[in-house]
Length: 394
Ligand SMILES: *Cc1c(COP(=O)(O)O)cnc(C)c1O
Image (cartoon, rainbow, N blue to C red; front, side):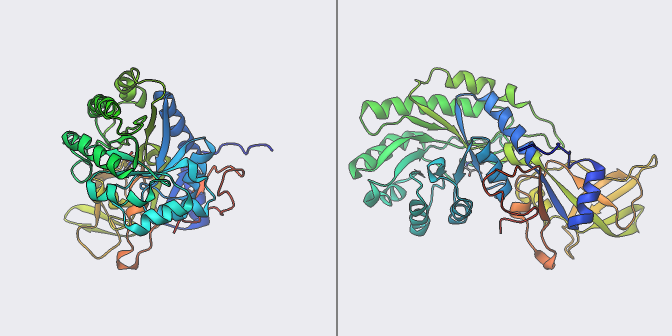
């Protein structure tokens, strides 16, 4: 079968064509860019098994593309398990990493066939006491990271000092522990915390093995890999160099896992919105778009991200402008103090790097619908490829 020629869906002509076909607002997802991100991360961390964390963009096209590239999945909720099941994913390629689960979440994941789970406290370990032949655990350790845009070690994770005690409890209950995991935070500036965490985990794993508390031959280094927004970051090869060095002394039998989310999905999608009205207020042009902070741009609130934004129209003269979302709420402003060409009703505005934590956390406040996801450059053979272009995970 011949592969169709690659058409870059982020080019203006293609953006206009897709809006013409699917309407506005859109989230244009380029599966080829998903592949590129996966390959770059794989090259930067050659000995690490990549499990895409669905949370930032739980869309079937991303899942299918990730699997076709040979990577695996990191599931965290019953909804994500359901999506994986619906797409016919092999459960052996899935891990479940939510540290706090309802009994039904555990049951759903087990029934699907997931085996490896995460726990970070005694009560959660006890939930597996009657499942010793069906499940294994990673114990999640917390390493605080005040430098990350999102510090995930405040809410989850066992203090390193309490880890051996937790591992002893698991051993007493007959719960198998295969290793440790951590997640130092999302969109981190450099890999210093990852490196500290790897070193600390290596010590803990040695100590736990000495006490025969489990096999401790899996180390899950979580996500956090950064991407360019308005602020550029180190390229992934440089970012991962110290991490590669930290992982090098690990014995070969230790399987290393990472759970990248943002790095895979973020650069793979753009948001497209249409100017639905405009007004001049106090010397500024206000443009009201059909997507905003309650929609795909919600990441500016929840995820503290700043997406590079530009209209498709260009002109030499630029005027002080404000881009606002469609809802009746005054906080629904995407960007102020921009210098933009004068826009007209119907003009398109594009946000870059909008794949992660955007559509996934969008609301439909005021009944403004979330953007439609249009997945392009899918491959017919990919799992889940039966779904038509534009279909959403919901
Ligand atoms: C959110 C999350 C991820 C993905 O993090 P990114 O920073 O987007 O790579 C991975 N693992 C767990 C447990 C998470 O909660």
